Amino acid sequence: MHERLDYIRLAPAALVDAGCGAGEDLAALAQRYPGCTQLTGIDFTAAYATRTRDRLQPGGLRGLLDKLRASRQLNVLTADFSAAELPAGSQQLVWSNCALHWSDAPDRTLKHWAQWLAPEGLLMFSVFGPDTFREVRHAARAAMLGAMTLEFVDLHDYGDMLVAAGLATPVMDAEVLTLSYSSPEALVAELRQLGGNAHRRRAGALVSRKRWQRFLDALAAQHDPDLGGIPLTVELVYGHAFKPQPRSARGSAGVSTVPLDQLTASLKRKQ
Image (cartoon, rainbow, N blue to C red; front, side):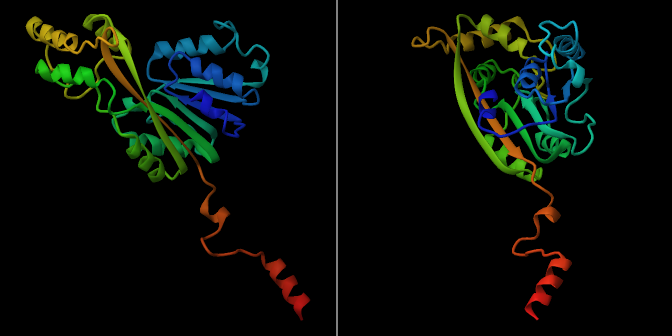
């Protein structure tokens, strides 16, 4: 995502990181845009919000903003980014790195974020795509467990959502990474670090040892000799779009607007 910003002309005075985690991206964006005077981070987890403040405020971990703190305002909200309240049209950049898939209604979330954007502002995000964790889903079916991963949305659907949110010139692309693990236990341990299973149809009770072992065995059975371990697919989807100028400022399609005084002056010259 940061590499994509290299090709976009943008000088935000205010930006928001929706799903800011511990503030790594917010700190990087602050360095990229030294003229940005208002930084906002939003995360549902209070501990992450605290870590973000520590990273960016005086006495933080690295003091990344020592030279600029006097002219900058930092606001970190502990809130659901799908419902957090920011003034409409107040942001030139809405950024969200690998967080939007936690929303159970991404279409409504994108519309909410689009309201924060000023005209010509940029919304940029990344999410997991539908191929993500397919090996885990296969093992869960084999063990007859409930849903163990979220149902990730296709990039084409995200493109449609951006248009429906009133944004223009959406760009979507994806890349697929294959991770490798020495054991099913190592794979599951790393998955848990990503936040656990938030699916509504996950198992509603404790899983028996026998069924859990069946799940681990199904993961182990997918061992790939070429990789030297158990594969785990991660599809990363990237998207961005701009907030267009209001239609009244752009004029109606096929219609030219001429101020009355210019029209009157033109007619007098022709007489």
